[in-house]
Length: 500
Image: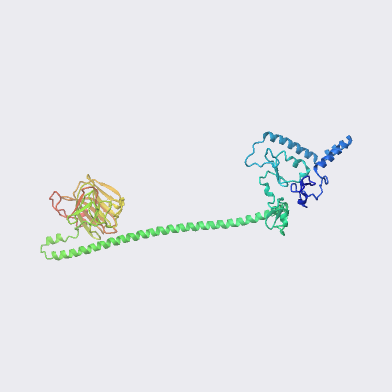
């Protein structure tokens, strides 16, 4: 393959080029040079100019100089040349080392320098020095110079290595001259400049359409978001209200079930007591002594016993379950049942009080003994304070701490300035909601009383918090421990309670 020089001065294979443009400057050799006509190469042009200068007379040289000065492009070219030379000198003195993102001049072989511009026509990047021909030579004035491009090779067709001069409207891609006759045959192709102008001309309409579409979608999105937010908020409120109502209903249902269970247990107990009373009355009816009959048939005096199913394993029951002792740390082989207290050393009575007036007495011994009443629904397995007869709102009790008495309800302690009594009497008027604790001695002394609305049957409850605490259920009138006083009279009616 031989290389021939084109009219632009570049050397290429003419047989390979055919009727296409020069791949370096994109000039068509078939088109005449608009400024200087056809020339074989740059060297011939310079030689001809030198020959003319040698043969010219001084007058012709001055005339030529005047013509050059009258050339409207000459001052501009000279100014650009001077500015370029001055800028090159300044850059050579101040040029910094190449960075990783800098574009390198394609014409600098031995010592690469930073490119100042990239030519989209030549598809080459130039430094300050190698850019001068593009600034000074009129033949390059139509070349497009842009800021340095690191990917300038993308401006060339990968298949044919020709500049991407055309734009295929069908495929929306830039193509070269050979692409038009091959894979893009029959497609509408226009110069890239014209394609850009068309796109820029249609940009306002596209922008307006996109903006309108965006605003419409944005408006719909906002409305949807607002509706969804309101709906979610409504769902949250509905769920919250549902939860609150459900909790209220479940609480009321649980309370009603507990109350019904307590009443059922009380009725079963009363039924059993009535059977015993009936048998006793049948026996007493044969007794002709009126005093014995009245004392034995008193309705306010209750004969209680401890419920072994509820006793903590550190509590020992004796005397037919009418005496309980704290034997810590010795446990007793009681079976594990749901009714048994697991943490607090507590025990309930087997009998309950409901609808009527009731009274019972108990002897207490040891510091830390608690005596009171509670509902059957009291927690048996928990270790919290609400599992103890001092720490919930459905238990009322009296404590002896070794120095004085204290009243407990809802985990609130009320100290009482009362002397010690070894026997405590407990009076309950269920219909009136009255609960009173008495100190039983030679006389009866009111220690403390509560007024409350009772919702379930009340069970006598006892907490023996310390080792060797003892509680013994006694019958009213039974002799006091270590004393032989006259039997105290239990409060048989409201007048007795008020007087005390």
